[in-house]
Amino acid sequence: MSLFEILLILGAALGFVTLDLLRKVLAERMRLVPLLFWMTAGVIPLYATWAVLSGAELPGTDYWAPALASIALNVGANLLYLRAVHVGELSRTIPLLALTPVLTALFAVPLLQEVPALQQVFGILLVVAGALLLQVGASPDHDAVDLAGRSAQVDAVAVRSRSWRPRLPRSAWLMLAVACLWSATTPLDKLALRSASVPAHALMLHLGIALSMLLWLLARREQQQLRLRASARWLLGAAVVVSAVALGCQLLALELVYAALLETMKRGLGGIAALCFGYLLFKERITAAKLAAVAIMIAGVGLLMF
Image (cartoon, rainbow, N blue to C red; front, side):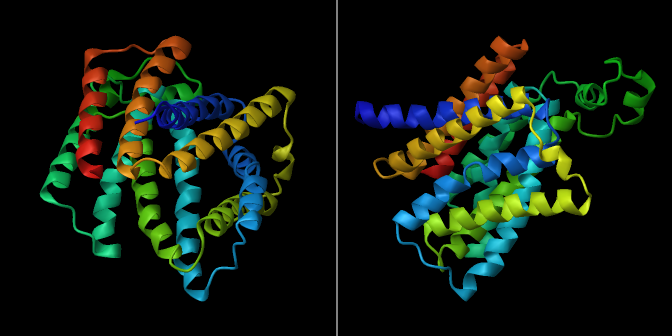
């Protein structure tokens, strides 16, 4: 692997985890719906330029059913994602996205008739085990308490009354839902791309998400929420730039290296970076369980993708 290819992979991995960090900070300063609108609308000119320069044509009639389904799932996934990184620890939530290729393999069975091999099944089990290990030591209630602005103390009686439930923090459940929704979009996107080019589909997805958020705000007469404060404006601009750079590095890398290798290294480096950013910026502890969980999930994704 050449130095240029390594730099592209590093740019994609660190770019996306930096984007995660910026979205976490922005989610503390903005409502989620206007935040998703601006982050989606901000990159539309990039995709529009790409579509025009590539000579993309309008999609065929078979395109719209899977594309609209993908847009709907992406709206839900992005909103849940923003909530998850807002209320939870960066080092516990972001690595859970390694479940995305796992669940994609499962969704591909009914939608695309693609059955995973035995090696991939073992990889799925490793990623699930790592995801559960990642939550060791996490409080199941502190996320919801912090979001509501109440005291961090939890009623011991209430906790005991829910002792039968899996002891996962709320942010973990949210990110698991995100991984599930994004996993379902991948087969839908593959079906849509049978009737459209990549730049045309990317443009339609972002237009659909941005339009959905705008219509939601207009229906609720909350369009004033689209006004940006100066501090949020700069952060939002930085997030859009980082998003464009990360996506550019990923697209360039895909032309040079195997997609499986890129996905594995991106998830692995992203998980490690999430641990480091969480420790340096949010005082999140780096535990042996977290390190072991990320390593297990990297190994599982590697088996799944190759």
